[in-house]
Structures are given as C-alpha cells and as structure tokens.
Image (tube, rainbow over all chains, first blue to last red; front, side, top):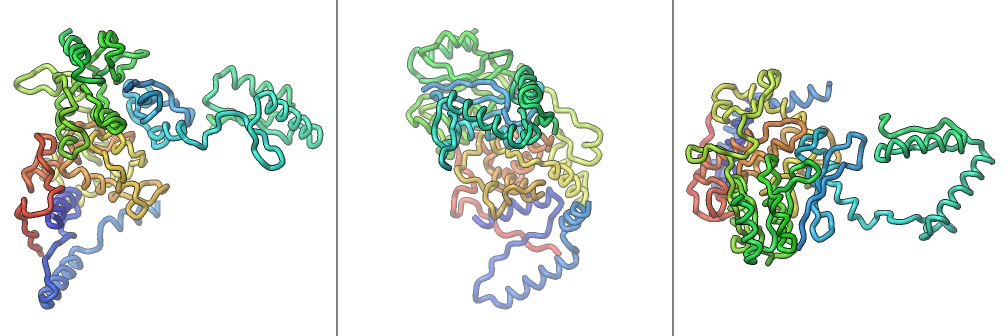
Length: 64
Length: 135
Length: 270
C-alpha cells in the first residue's frame, strides 16, 4: 500500500512542480550501512536542490 | 419515501445567493447551490453550504422566551412583547432615548426595514439605527 | 416523450419506489424525486442543462432506507459515479434502475445535453499566470518547467476561500470522516486555506475515485481548474495502476492490500 501511495504522490508532486523531494526506500533493521548511505545521499540531494520553494512563497505572502 | 427540492435564498448575508434544499420526508437534509440562479451561478460559500444545519439545530429558538429570576422561561408573544415594551419604556425614561440602538436585517423586506427605522426614530426617538447590509 | 413513458412504467410497475429526475419549478430546472402517488408529475420531467449530483441524493435516500428502490436519470458521468459507488458499497446495484440520457458527444452520439459541450472560456490573465481550464495535464507538464508549474498552481490555490464546495458537491465523496476536517491536517477557522496542502489532500483522496464529472469546478467560487487537476490524478492512476475509476465495477488499487500491483520504489535520481 505504501509503495502505491508514494508512487502516486510522487507523480502528483511532479505535476505541482515539487519533484524529487519525496523518496521511498525499503531498509531492514539489519541494514545499518544502507540506512546511512540512503540518508546521506538524500540529504545531499535536498541540499543541492536548495530550500523548499513553498517556504519562499509563504514568506512572500506573509510580508504582503 | 418522499424527496423533493425547494429553491430558496440563503439567509446568512445580504448577497442573496440561491440555494436548493434537499427535503427528505419533510426534513431538510442537504443544501445545494441553485445552479440557474443569477446571483451565485451555482457557487456557495461555506456558510451557504451548511445552511441546513441551523434549521435542524436543537438549539434553535422556536418561540419567545422571557428571562425571569435569571432563567429563560417560555412565554406567549403577548407576554414577551409587553415585557419588552415595558422595559424599553423604563430604559428610555431612566437613561434617555440615545441609550437604545436598533440593528435591522438584510433578510426582512424593505417595508419591514422602513417600519423598523420609523419605530426607532418616531417611537423610541433616537437615530441609533443601522443595517447589516451597510457592511 | 419516451423518457416520460419509461419513467412512468418504472414507477407503475413498482420497479422503483422513487425516480430522481429534473423538473422546472419557479423557472429553475431543479432535481425532483417523482413517486407513484404523484405519477402525473412525470409529465414535467426534464433533462436539465444544469447538472446536480443525483447519485449523491440517491446515497442520502439509501442511507435513510437501504431497501429503497431508486430510479435515476443518468448521464455518462452519472453512470461512472454509480459504478464507483457500487464498487465502494455505498449503493446496491440491485436497487438502482437507470434511464440513460445522451451526454457528452461521442462519434456514436453527436447529440448531447451536457453543460460541457462548449469548452469553458479561460481569461487572458489566467492563461498568462494561472492554469487553463482546457489544457491537458500532459501538455501542461511538457510546456512549463517545475518552478513555473508551482507558481501557476499556487496562483490558483491561493484564491481558495475554503468553502468545501468541491467536496460537498462531489458525487463520490461519501466518507463520514473527512481528512479536510481533521484539525491536525487542516487547521479549522484559518483563512486563507493552507496551500497547497488543502488541495493536495483532496487530490490525493481523489486518486482512484474521481469520475471526471466536473461538478467541483462548476461549484468553485474561486475558479480553480479542479477538473484539470483531477484529470492529472486520473492520468497518474491509470499510468501506474491501469485503473480507470467508474469504468466498470472493479476495486480501486488503493483499497486492496496485497500483491495485486507489482511496484518497486522509484530509484533516487541525483
């Protein structure tokens, strides 16, 4: 069920112009190294993409 | 089972959107926008969409109540109107007519609104009269 | 008129207890529940140009009396909505009789009675800064980069006055508890609505449900192109799961747990 929902939401976010900010990975509790790798890779990816554009829009709205 | 639809006008604000009540067995069950109404053209705001809720609310006032000894008691219209007249007269005598203000509604007729301002100016004797559609 | 005769037969032969159609009252074409006791009222039966969610009304009736047999004047979108409501056990197909009327034109039936025969006009400002009602989701995705897609949708969403009309009018929105009323997801009493969360929650819940009737877009006081958004939702569901809601009676991929769909998480592209 999770993979179905995530696959759909990824598609929806792409349509909205927010692609790449959602990721699903199966990691067992025995796969410590994989966990570290995935989190590092994803953090790096998000950092390269920069802050969430929604934040800028919301702050602009607050400022009027 | 009986199911009919009754076109009406939203009773919340002065815009006057057309609504359609879904009446099942004599009880209003749902409100829909009236699509062919020239004012709202099939659209409603959140208050209009929930119009049926207050009609069926158990809190709804269905007759006059008069406060006696701190409690609201059921009364007849004669009792309630007499009580109101007595108290208004007393307030007017003690504090002057400008201590009373009248707010009228967009949901009564022009003639009733006219009557209300006439009552305020001629009977009570104050210019403190206003209307919710003057927002 | 054949339609009136057919509806009268349904009522007189006790095939249905109530027939949901349209009639004219005070100059407005509005829905009406015709009954056997007043069968002559059916002479006023009309195929209204204004569409109302008759299937939703049928659900209301079925909730009051589950054994009630209901006849419905059904367009193509009503048929899809009924199929979906059968799928989700909201209506019993044995209790529903439909009289089909022409709707959106197709190669087989060029005549239609639907309000969508002429495309809705889109203003110039909306075309420049917002989302065109008549754009196809595929073209929208191809013609605009991600920043522009976001800004265009945010332009549309921020107009929302949170009237909940899209949900209230939707023939396939039948949940007793709605996520849009959950205080942790959508803060009650706060305007403007939290965008785009409010609309994305609804879009997500339309996955595998939306039957593309367009009533939500009709009911939106802020002119948000909701039909176009839910078309994209439908495209995504059909691309990923090969499921078209309301096409026939088939469980939605989101309602079945198990291995009916073989999917693996998409790899991370850096």
